[in-house]
Length: 131
Image (cartoon, rainbow, N blue to C red):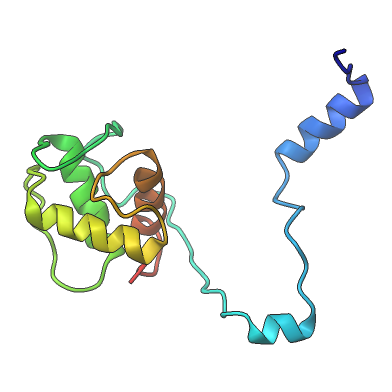
């Protein structure tokens, strides 16, 4: 049997959907002191990389403006040597992608898919580095 939402419940659900995450577990003072400190990350109002808005899956052998976009984000997300923003997804870009994925705590497969794009956009436009 289907459950019907009342209009009040629906309105409450819609209002909460746009609100900040309220379901985050609260930590006691002793848990907070033992927890890792949270780094403050701020974002600009303009995307630091503007080669394309396209977010296709990228892997070894891919080329084009989306690869340039990913390379630009990797350069803004990682410390160390900058990648050439040449639009060629070669072994150096693959290694940088793997490093980024490991540092971000996501699946490290060397492929820039939806999850990696999401993290790249976040870290690329932040004031800090993922590692």
